[in-house]
Image 1 (cartoon, rainbow over the protein chains, first blue to last red):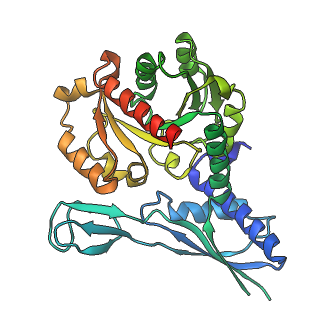
Image 2 (tube, chains in turn green, orange; image 1 turned 90 degrees about the vertical axis):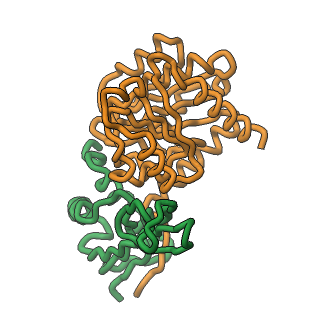
Image 3 (cartoon, each protein chain N blue to C red; image 1 turned 180 degrees about the horizontal axis):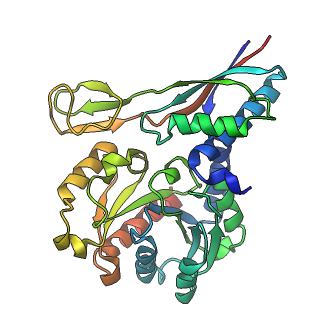
Amino acid sequence: MLYNYYMHELAIAEALIEQVGTELDRAGQSGAVKRLELAVGRLSGVHCDSLRFAFGLLSPGTPAEGAELSIRQPPAISRCRQCAAATEITEIVLDCPQCGSPEIVIEEGRELLLESIEIED
Amino acid sequence: MKLVAAKSILKANDQLAAENRQRFDAAGVYCVNVVGSPGCGKTTLLEALFDHLRERLRPAVIEGDIAGSIDAERMEALGVPVVQINTEGACHLDANMTASAAAQLDLTDVDLLMVENVGNLVCTAGFDLGEHLRIVVLGATEGDDKAVKYPAIFQGSDALVISKIDMLPYTNFSIPRITADMKRLAPESPVFQVAALKREGTEELAEWIAEKKKIVSHG
């Protein structure tokens, strides 16, 4: 299928829809999906608007059709080697937001998770 | 009713990648995923690495490109077994494409499998191929702000290779800046500086890869 990969949010939306199908099968559920809760980290490189757009394109005709996407965007963490502060950040920083030291390590923020599936009772 | 999933959206890819890694391990193949933007020097870097390593390690390469087989032809000219993947528009390789390509190689004749990913600093970041090592290549002409602009790919890479360092005098690229940014994002990952056409710095990188392979093979 050609269209799958023109932008990687399409490939990710396709994987998400497949994952929803797998989870529904596993739980023996076939009801309509109302809502999907996702975690898309701030540094994951995934653009949420593009993901919604791709999901809208690809979900019709699948069990995920019509589901609302509820997207949480976990922050990354700047961990300072000088003052030991662990600060949540929503974009890359060059210095510790607390003490200004450049001796920081940036962790996390790369989550790409399907957290829950809400099904109509 | 709410089903709690708490699983990676790319779980299917991650599982396939894990299977690829098992297949490589069983065959004694060490796999390296080389990522970087178009024109950063990935293919030239591979040519240099094969120059240094081919007497010790039997190489093979998977070339990922949107179209064409120019890179594969360059590898064939070196006598390195090569499989070309044409993604026909895809902006990255995934574990499934890698599995299909690897199936076309006789892995019993391969020690070092280099995968040249599609030129892209964004989309390649999320897709594990089943590699043991991921190397990101950044040309000195591309600007020293790229780690900050495309953090995911740098954060997830095991080494940064700054290529075309013979061009440094003609740019405002700051090695200290990109090195500091890489250290913030991937503190354990070394930074190499190479001019691959002149084979400058490439032997050091080749040695590092060979050492990494030894650790996996013996561990």
